[in-house]
Image (cartoon, rainbow, N blue to C red; front, side, top):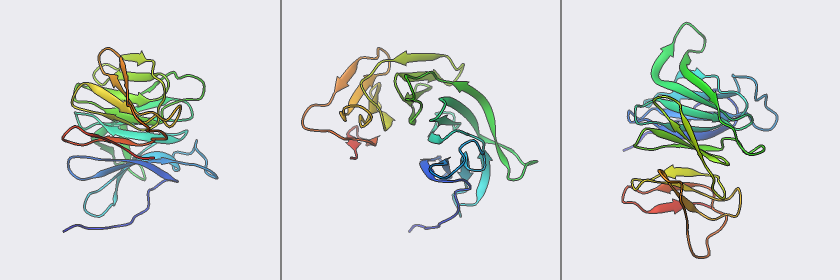
Length: 212
């Protein structure tokens, strides 16, 4: 059996979601057309309870919160598309002295990108790194925030597999799905007549699925 509930996103234009091991949900609100992306009540990350979708806390990720991922420690990473800021948010700590309660931001850093191609998606791998969907792709060490950049042809959706690769949907430039070696940065393109792929995900058995 399953439950279905519909609740407010506590922001404007919900865009990305990530489900925690306990079943709770993290949602990014991107504050799109007609919104005020500098307003943390509109552009933010919210944590919703698994039981009924009630608000646990909200984090002020301003300037178009377009991405969210959960790392191996259970912490949350969120990216700003407009200015490339990356937020590290506690998966458990909540400041209940504010209204609404605030998810505790552990760190905020800026990830340089080419032109306006800032963080459009995020993926966390099992080795303790977070990867950006941007040009270039940036690998962030979750322990000390050191970064390494990798050139690649395009980006949109992003997902990490169990074979030391990060997969990108290439709608942002050419449409080809490609894999990036997490250590060397070597690129492997898919073959065949595949184009216009935006979202990508990894099946537990290892196959890659894309949407267009």
